[in-house]
Image 1 (cartoon, helix red, strand yellow):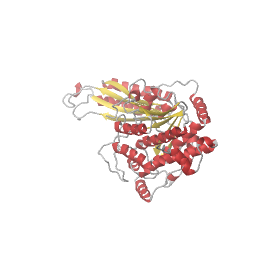
Image 2 (tube, one colour):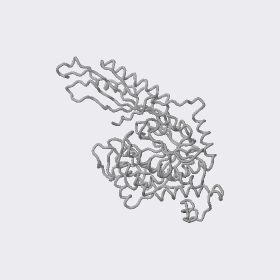
Image 3 (cartoon, rainbow, N blue to C red):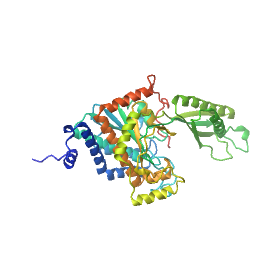
Image 4 (cartoon, rainbow, N blue to C red):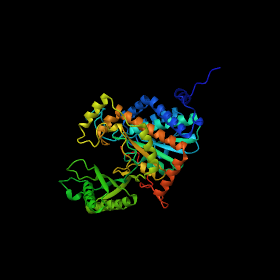
Length: 485
């Protein structure tokens, strides 16, 4: 009779001389489980680095991440997850699940790139494709590390027979497309107990951080075209409408709360100076820590657009592109993530990586962190960031916590060619491993001790307040699948 193969987790116990989980005191069992998920992630480190590099090469922008989403789904399906693809009306969104019953622990995965940031994995500015996209926010690492963590936890659940469900959420178009909001609106997080996430960074940090709520729209002005010299009186310039709106919004900056952020870019302004433009478009972002305050400011921006159209004799329409809530922090969870990040530790550079890092740092001006800080964990310090993320909407529906891992050279900013360069080589892959292990270990804590989930839920409902009712800031619009086209 053919002998059954020894399972990986049993082999781990035999090699390390430890007892199966059920035969050990709870604390020892948890530590052994954490060792196992970390070892599992390390064992497939090269494979995961290859997956991340492939997604980096594709550099697919929001809602167009077809190859990236399929690659991650295939990895999860091969590992035993059931896949639901094309959720929430988004072809590149998916949910991968393993297990039965509760608790249900979700892990977020992103994989969209940024337009205009194409870059070789070199410490000098050199685009791979002229005007092409690049992973300036490291989402190729984000999606891969989250997948690695989910698979490691799944293997542990399978071998131990522990109850519970691990769920990987493939969330596209974080960069301005608000993919997670449509998934929240669809109810895909309604049965989840805790959500974990992470983000590439120039440092290792699990401090809880809130963010800015954000709403964006494209304001489109329609005028009358004519010869700008031969018959200017017949024309009504759509570009005048855009410029008048921008002038009024810029004056508005003096009369909004100081923590407001307003940004815009003219996406269409006409084609020739001697042709009065009959169409022009400006794309606006407005941010504030409070969603309620943001909505009031937004109404004034829309009024400025209406006034601009009235004054220039044009017509104006606007399309909400995305709207996201601020992140609701959860310190109960954040402290758990922080403890696991400290257990994992930072990364150490090889001689080649040090040379690469030094070359990158020579392009950064005055880096905010010293070289070597990638080996350490930053002090735990709750803070407010000035960016925005669609993780915010998830955090108002489910207790949520995450971390940043040092995938970039210390001092590097997100959305930069330097971030793309480091993310395409071993520095990025090393930081990705730190994140994957931290997420997996935190999931082990949540599965093994219900006290952690209870504490997270108590804080969540206290912070959210009894009167809270979720409302998507983007309204009932469908996903803008073509917003990057």
